[in-house]
Amino acid sequence: MMAHTQKSLQLTGRHVILGFVSFFVVVIAVEAIFITLALSTHTGVVSKQPYRKGLHYNERIAFARTQEKLGWRETLTVSKNKRTLTLALKDQYGKPVLGLKLSGKIGRPVTMTQDRILAFSSAGKGSYSARMPEKMAGAYIADLKASDATHEGKILWRFRKRLWLKP
Image (cartoon, one colour):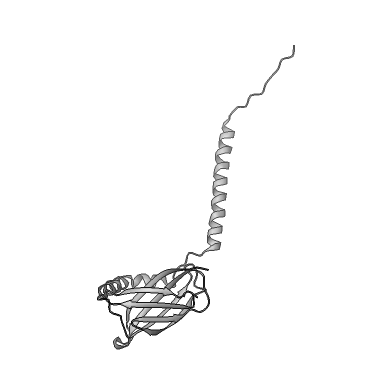
């Protein structure tokens, strides 16, 4: 009768160290791919001059408190044909806020390449309208500022709102 010899698999130190090293090589390779993809698709810069904005952060907080004391309420609407943006401002007593000069822009939340300047004009009764640059659809952010001619163009009020314009 023939002796049947079976080779048994033995776990040696060499196998353990190779498994250990290959695990970390795979993890590091995957991480390197993710880092490369992340850095090539978005730089991470979301603001022009973030350092300077940071220096003036306390001023922005003070401005927000002052604006809150005004008690103005805003209503931002887009016409059905998506060609006109209208802002209605009322004071804390519900009366229209008149005599303001509005300026602003509208753009996509993720890029500044599609930002468009808005030219507002008074539409009466505390409402101010601006023509949209083109027929737009999707997510946008409206960034508006109001100043008063009697205060030498000093900005009295700021408003930032995310809009969803249906296609």
